[in-house]
Image (cartoon, rainbow, N blue to C red; front, side, top):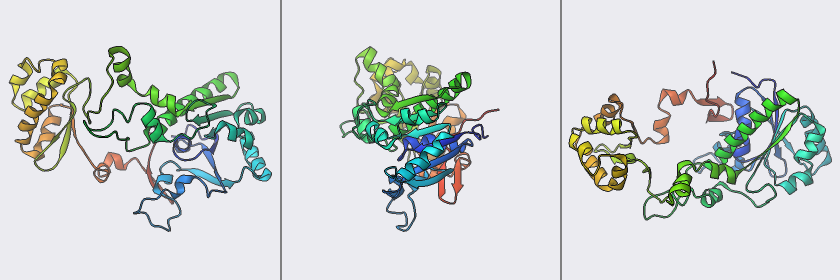
Length: 351
């Protein structure tokens, strides 16, 4: 499926959010030209290697995660010759993806006003950290902290923790994709280009979902409760089985709750006044999970998950990365080239 095979995308961005947008278009057939900073040796993530990666490897695994299918040029925008080369490429491009500070973009002649004057049908897609005129550096972990994610992530009584991927960057990338696709549709209708801007901050706030409305409507400040769900029980609760496997429960309906009790042969629980509805189960979660863990740990560990799934009770094993990619469905999502391996980012199907 190559719906963008006639699109030309110039990527002037680095690290994760912007490159993730570029890779999305590359996966779907667009010509994506990534222009990297010659002075710094290119995208900074080229050097973000794990200790387990060979020291002489040309680039890090991190870099390859969002730079599949692109052509790479190394230019110095402070040189007139390199600026002109870039401007020539942009004059025939459909989309530019950038994550410059606004003042830097203007100084380098890579701002939306300059580039769209050269190419009126251009879609200029830009990611910034906070307000568009705010030039402070924006790093994902800082955004996770300042938009409430870190405060509510972690275990009770423990320090806040960040999520193990740069999720704010990825959320902003999805927002920018949506904006660019909308701009492409508008260009079909009007023949005109657009400037699309997305901030990491607003992307994060927009993704707070029920945790935001729990505060806005119910006055509840979300607390650190591990993987537990603040509105549903048992949901997100983890049970460690005797063979060392951890499984997570995701009981979202009253019918699923009754099925769980039936399968575990504790039918009296769904009739119990302390657990007869979801609100009471959330309120009495500690006692509830003590009962469930005692019951489940007494079962044959290897059969517990099969038993739950066989009865359409939502539950899953907590897998490490090696175990994840032992699944044939996950293996189908691996993209391989001379640079290495990474997973697809465009996974929707059309027919």
